[in-house]
Length: 188
Image (cartoon, rainbow, N blue to C red; front, side):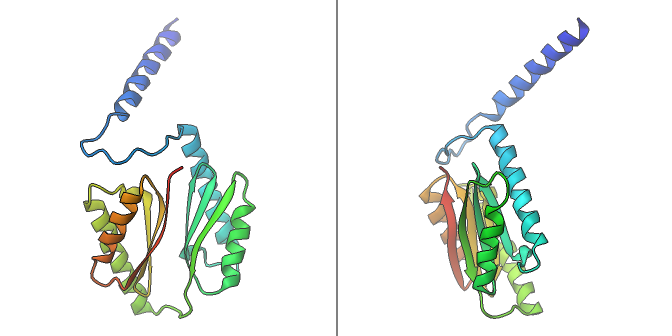
């Protein structure tokens, strides 16, 4: 009897907590199609599995690739040196259990980065991420930022074209950014 009461109290508390999480924010961005908690967890598992598979492949520089998943659709972005690396990455990602489709937004970069270039790119990435976080009209936690040789690549699933346009403008305004590439997709 006591266990049933504790379970009922726990259920009521969780319901109240989850209901509070669904409150609208002061600045209401465009609503994205909803996903269930189970779908979010499944997508996290798929992303982790794809990352592990990419890192396990000796021909792919997994650390230069970003993996994001929404409803089983995997978005690959980042930079590789050769077309074969890009092709292998797409094949490896597509072979992972739970992947429904792979969207290839990987870019080719021919010149190998230097140590100084990597430091500069890290600083540019940090500045872009900070600027995106500071802008309340952008849901910046959904946007991945990778920089290589001054080219900033923004990727991820966002709510609207307006968020894409704003994120591109913010990134382009940062000192040290030579070019901004849009690899973002609108949530389905």
